Every structure is written in structure tokens, then in C-alpha cells.
Image (tube, rainbow, N blue to C red; front, top):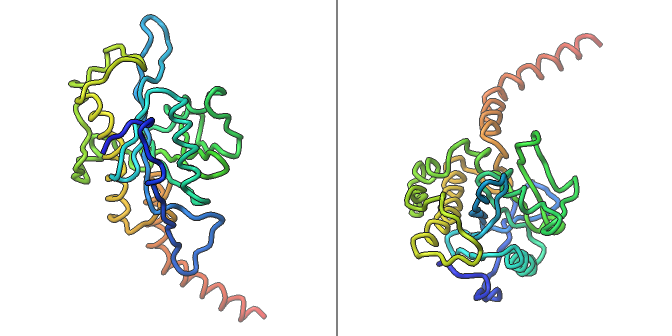
Length: 246
């Protein structure tokens, strides 16, 4: 369901705690729901500058909220923050470095250093907002797949639509009317991403607490699992040597 931000009844949006497995500890609790965020931009002709003309925010496949201005986006974030009631909502962005550049402008939100975790200047892995109410993660670095490949791999209902039909060369303003085809193109990007993340969690038997930040995190975890029996044997040998040296 696609709904424009000004028509959203936030009282009908509820979030539920994702309980940790027995023995796991942490400073916060994730909401069970998964969100995705994306923006579409137009480039000013003859200038190295782009601006956002529409944004889309999906909560699982329950709804896709869309808006045309950053003021609407900030209003939505504040409303959702109230509905979270202390939970943390994990929001996936398929190229967080790009969207992060926009939302970190002084006019939108000023991130503290501790709220941004980057590998380098062009690889943002995580950003948190409003005292941790929202955690943005880069789904591209997590999967190393384009959004088209990702939604196809998990056979998503909301597969990414053709960019050729969307026509990125067209100059669109926040006031430019969008056709039904254009609206669905935007909505499918975020609805499909939440669907694909669910598929990824099921495939790897993960939850939001155990999900790695990057694709290499899956490899490191598997390597540790395979090495665990050998490490146990080495620890046993080490303890025996220490015992006989006494």
C-alpha cells in the first residue's frame, strides 16, 4: 500500500519488540519490523548538483510512505519515533553513502561523530538518529548485489522495475506530478528491499541482532565456525602443557 505522508494515520502504525535469544545481552531492543528508505533525485543541468524530489519509506510490505519534501520526511521520522516507544527501527538503504550525504546536511539533521560508522570516506556502514531510535544500514555493502540482482535472487514480489522506463534524464521537481508508473517504480525499490532482507535473514538463519554489517561478515563468521573445533583442540593442548610445566 502506497500512501502520501500527509495522509498517514500514525496511530495505526505499531511496532513490536524483537526479543533476543536466551543468553544474549544488549543495550537496546530492535523492533521486529524492517524498514527501507530511498530517495530519487534530479541533477541540475550544467551544474554538479542534485536535489531530492521524492522519497519513499517502507515498513516491511505493510506500507510505503512517500513524500516530496524533507520537511515531510522529518515529520514522518518524528511521528514514527513516538510510535517506537523506545525500540530501535532498523532501516536499510541501498547505498547509504548517497542518501546519507543528503540527510546529514545541516538543514536536515546534524549527526554527531558517534552516530556515524564508516569504513572510509565513501563507505558508510551505519548511521543512527534521534538517540538511536533509527539505525540506517547499507544493504549494498551487506549483500554486494545491485538492487535488481538482490530482488531477483530472492524472487521478491516487489522486484526492482526497469530504470529505462523511468527515464532518469527527465528533470523532475518536488512539484512535478508523478504518474502511477513512476510512483510504483519508487515504491517497489523499498518494498522489494525489505522483502529481500527478510529472505536474507531466513537464508542465513539470522535475526536483526546477529546480521553482519557487510558481505565479508558472513565469510568471517563461517570461517570462525569451521575453525572452532581446531581452536578447542589447541586450547586443550595449551592447558595440558601449562599443567605439566608446573
